[in-house]
Length: 122
Image (cartoon, rainbow, N blue to C red; front, top):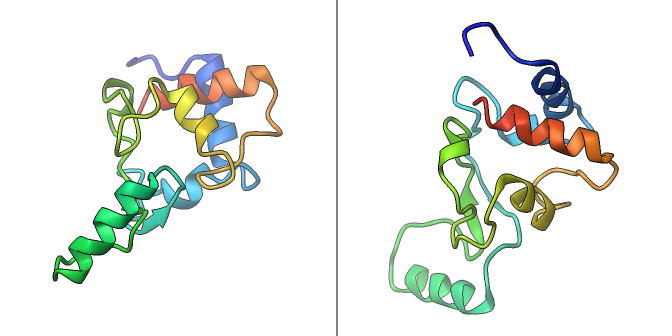
C-alpha cells in the first residue's frame, strides 16, 4: 500500500525483527535472504536418501535436508510453501518449522496473525 503499513502489519514487522523470534536472522537484506543453506527439518527420509544419492553421483548441491534460504519477496503469492509444498499457508509454514526456522511458540495469537500480515506485504 503506498500509504504504508497498517497497524497490524507494523506490529508484525516488529515481531519479524525481534531477536528471540529470529526471522530476520536468515531473511535479511534487501531481498530478505542470507543466501545460506539450512536444514529446517521439512525433508522426508526418502528425500534425504535421494539427495545423498545425487551428491554421491557428483551433483553439486547442499547436504541432504538443506535448502537455500528463499527470498521473502512476493512470498504471499507462492503457496504452497516449503520445498515440497507441505505448508498450505504462511501460518502453517511458520508452525511446522518452529525451532528450525525461527521461534514462534512464545507468540500470542495477535503476534502470530500480525507476523503473517507483515509477511504478506513483502
